[in-house]
Image (cartoon, rainbow, N blue to C red; front, side, top):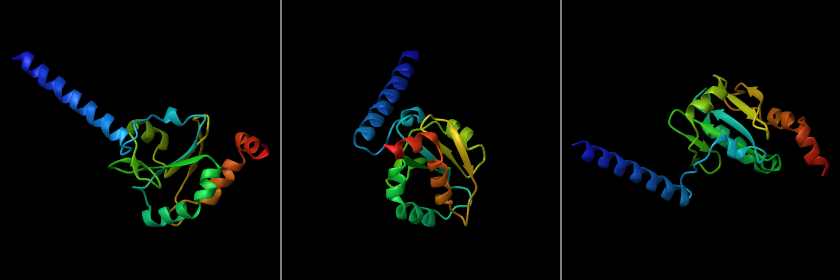
Length: 149
C-alpha cells in the first residue's frame, strides 16, 4: 500500500516538474529568484492589490518604457493571486514570502542592482510617482557611473 502511495506521489511530482519546465520553455512562466536579477536589473516591486488603479498604472508605465529600460529597471506587480512582470504579464515563480517581507506592507519598493532595498513608495493618485522613482535611481552611484560611460 505504501509503495502505491509513494509511486503516486512521485508521479504527481514528476508531472508538476514536467509542466513547470514546459511552461517555462514556452515563455509562459519564468522560474526565477530575486537573486537572478542582481547586478543586471533594478526592480520596482508594486503591490497592485493596495490602492491601485491598475489601468492608470499600466498607462503610466507604458508612457515611460524608454526611461524604464534606460535605467535597467524591471517592474514586478504583486497581487494576491500572482507575481507578474509588468508589460508582459508573465508570471514569475518568486517566493511570495520573500516578496511580502521586502514589501513590508508598503505600496512599492525600489531594489538596487546590488539587491538591496533603496526606497519605499506610497501611492500617489492611486498609482506611483514614476518621476520620483527615476530621480531616486538617477541619484544612485551606480547610475551616475552608467551615465558617464
